[in-house]
Amino acid sequence: SGVWWMVAGQYRQPENAYPLGFAIAQLLGIYVLAQAADSLILVDMHASAERVNYEKMKAQRQSHGSLHSQQLLIPVSFEATHEEMASLAEHADLLRRYGLDCSAVGSHTIVVRAVPQMLGKADIPEIARSMLQEAAHTGSIRTVEERENRILSTMACHGSVRAGRRLTLPEMNALLRDMENTSRSNQCNHGRPTWVKLTLTDLDALFLRGQ
Image 1 (cartoon, helix red, strand yellow):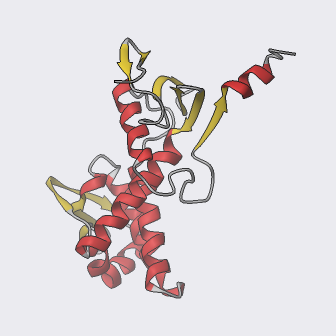
Image 2: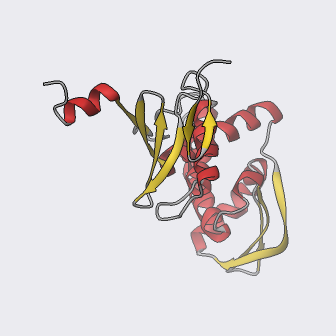
């Protein structure tokens, strides 16, 4: 029952059910344009996906004590710097608690055998390098919570959709639904807004309607 409205050829429920509306298009490979009942919503797809991933991983770690990992069918190896090898030697157990299973082969090679399940599509050497670097810097962080937040933030950034990647309408709508179900989704992990809203009143003012 109630009023339904059409987006992309399908009838949808109004904005009280879906506050961020439904995707219309992707703009410049960076933004998602969505239509709600009384407004247009413009979403920074990378920043919003970063916040969603961060909150999902944080909830999983708090609930289970560690992140679920995904074993790689074919381990990935890369040439590592002296600093990366030293970080691995000191922090391998810490990284395993975050779902990253790495080991040293020789003096200049690191092999990755498992990655956090949520980051299965990320660039594996890149995420391994970033986490090794972050782990090396955690000694200067005052609390365990601060260390965890920094590592999770690094991981969330790598697991998010990148600018320039083309998304389908279902992928864009899935991101909007995730945002609606994620706390603090209006800001990315760095404090920047993830979306803005232009109401019908805002649009009318831009075009001097009613004046």
